[in-house]
Amino acid sequence: VISNRWTKKSILASMVLLFLSVLCRAIWLSMRACGYDDIPMQYVNRFSSLTYFSGFTLYLQTWYLFLASSKKMNKVAESDPVAHAGVCLSNGILNAIVWICVFGLSVAYWTKHDGQKSVSCPYCDELGYIFVSMGCMLVSIGFLYFGARMYCTLRKVSSNKQIRQIAKKVVIVASICFVCFSLRSIFWLWKPVAGEYSPKGTYPFMHYTVTELIPSIVLFIVLAQIGIRGDAKPLNSAGPKITSELSDSDLTMSGGDGTVRRPSFELAFNESN
Image (cartoon, rainbow, N blue to C red; front, side, top):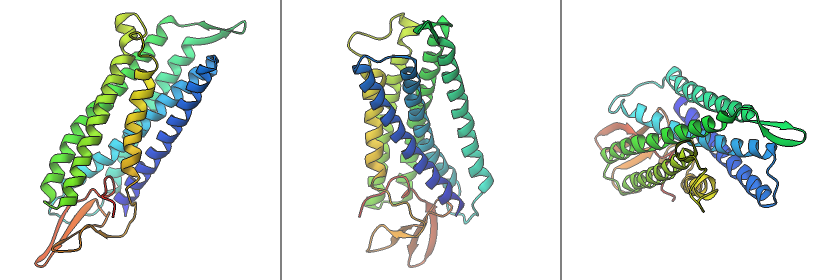
């Protein structure tokens, strides 16, 4: 089913990108601790930051797809492959612009002259900081906006206890990601505004370590409970059964007097059984 396929791919791609981000960040921190801070390490640093950005934008994409499907509430509608592909394409274009600009500014800033690092474009570094800061702020606003809409939509779906637990997980993830991405945006903007890289004792923790690891760990924990399957899975065993069909992003409530179609969210947050 098209919606299931797109959501699966988004979540799996998000997991891979976040894993690469954590791996590259560990390499960069280790090499920096050993005193190796040459130009290749600058590119490893940027690669880690950009994969981190892309991983979370892909996860936000699954929230957007869910909210878009919720507009079909109480309607039996066919999946729209063009709409899903359009969302993925738009996200891809956004990430391509960010990657090209940030890496382009990094290449323009760092050059190697007589075996030593030198600066060829003094202003490119600060422009890169501003660009990264804007990207982080965009993601933080996305988590605030879509998180609030996700919570309100899930609360309307059902009074089922497990659905309410899913709504609480949405609030936790959205809140943590909003705070961490907002802090990350502020610290990346510190040098262009204040003229110094960051307040004493905050680098690299508030730029990278804390603001990257905490959201990544939270998301890994949440996604570890997900069963990405295409078959229906009952969420309770007594009374009216609520099942996730993972087709057209709908949650089917099967009662004794008929079937009412509601939006589903088991794919992005699931209560482990």
